[in-house]
Length: 115
Length: 116
Image (cartoon, rainbow over all chains, first blue to last red; front, side, top):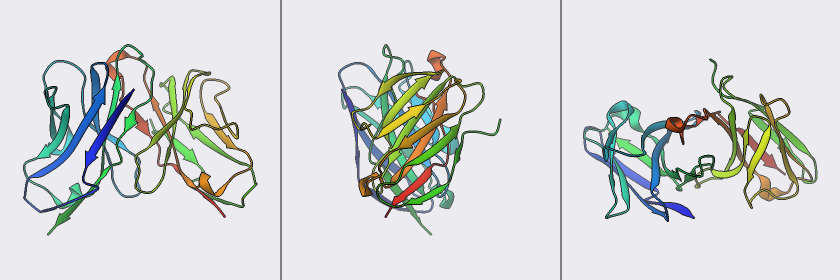
């Protein structure tokens, strides 16, 4: 079984400040990890993903995340927040081998950008 | 490519009625997923198709729920004898079968169901 935990249902940062959204996972097999973003009135879209290889992965809109196996974490960061980053962010996990299982999502973190 | 489309966007029904939702995936995708999302929660996996075959069903999917993908293209999700607890956003997603695309889902905007 696999699961993800997102710390903080709401995170508020000032425009231009560092964004840090936390995600910890639990998986009995090597995980594939994802961050999805949901803008208001839009469908979820993939921000970035980690499968194998380089543990620091870069995504769209300047976001990046680092897979840390020792900490079972996959935190999402962005050096400088922009007003357009305000959205709901979901961490998700699946695994290889099974190949067809749906993603298991966290509860989400609502990112608020203060002007 | 017009993305994943879902119909209707909103559905209001009375308890006990049956409802059906439709999902049209991205045409070249052979995998199709249904998820349910309630306020303050992440999407919860319901079921998954590869082509026309339903390969996985969550324990969340009670006997009142049925999904089909008759020709491996569009899919329908039917809820019989709706209950107030069925009120949620129902999301459809599609993906490619290629291993490098694992987990890369393209989501529709969802169908918001309200059961009165």
